[in-house]
Image (cartoon, rainbow, N blue to C red; front, side):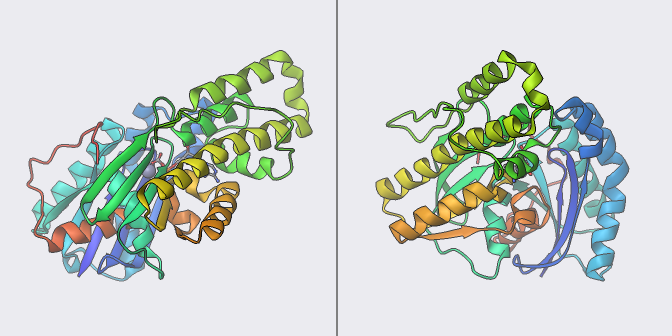
Length: 333
Ligand code: KG4
Ligand code: ZN
């Protein structure tokens, strides 16, 4: 069973060929960071235009790298939301056209479900039920995953997503887009205790909030803009900011373990590739004797293999999409 996955939900054009929902035959991600970097964030119109240029070459490369022709594909799994509507339209339009032309069934996949399924592309697979933290540029949410297709949301961010906070802080520090990788690197050289940034605990809730943290960083930076030229200041701000984000993410996952009694945790989304978060969550899991599953960093960030992995399960359950499939910018899991 071969699934071609396609994801154009945000700023990466990606296609992948996945066997039986678990073995990656190819995975191609064409990044757009060169276009958006100078704006300090994604410019939706530019993202759509680049998707249009890249979708066919990226799919073609994924098929070639997997050494197959399109007719060997059993189903095309395409991400139809949530995301930027102009970007989603490109992937959905392309998938529908190819599916129609070659008579290949179409499967519609929620991007968040894709992030959860990235864990099933690794050798060691989680067992149900598990706690899932999706921490990305667009989302920061905690779920109980009872089984395939059974997701119960415990909490979500009330304002910025954690990755968005990284990107905004990076812009404040003039470090470019995306902010996560560069702040992660800088944080390793800084003092996490240098600044006492706020943690929004939101007690009695599994919700998150990161906008106050971003404002706190802004106030520190605005006090003396000349400090932005000082590498040790930048490293200290990065380390202190990262400590605040990681503290909250790890504590909420820990509370979910205590409250639900579930002993397996899966982390996904771009922020799950953060080195500080990976270390801290593993330490917490060791202490509490729970199993933690962290996808490799390239599967944490957006990719189409995760869409194909989730799509495989829909396809074998007979859950295919019609040609009137429309993408949705807002699409809860
Ligand atoms: O999952 P993803 O590729 O796209 C969305 O679905 O949003 O996540 C992208 C986000 C960006 O905000 C980026 O800054 C963040 O993930 N990110 C990181 C790291 N790598 C990527 N955040 C923290 N540490 C990282 N190492
Ligand atoms: Zn994503």
